[in-house]
Length: 134
Image (tube, rainbow, N blue to C red):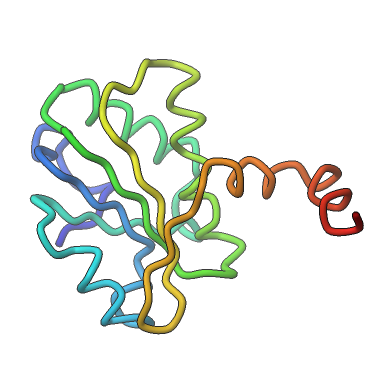
């Protein structure tokens, strides 16, 4: 396991997990499930690193063509970690993603797969308010 922002972009290859840096210590069983079978595991703390810097780093890693699967994972209910799940959309603004990208949150010992619709709704508070109040 390596810290994303201090890793070389050419190190990223195969199936890559990018997890919130606190995930392993706060949800060790969920983290172990997510990391199982991954070729590379990187941690990222979005309390320390601005999301735009992380997006640029991940886009550069993807640009090497060595990654064939990307997974983002965070703890649930964290205002900082939720930004991990916005990165795919932001990266797609600059490049076409031709690999599968999955998103998970850890809840206790479980890993919950997060849908694109849920991620998009979480970014649009006005629409989310409408959905909840319906």
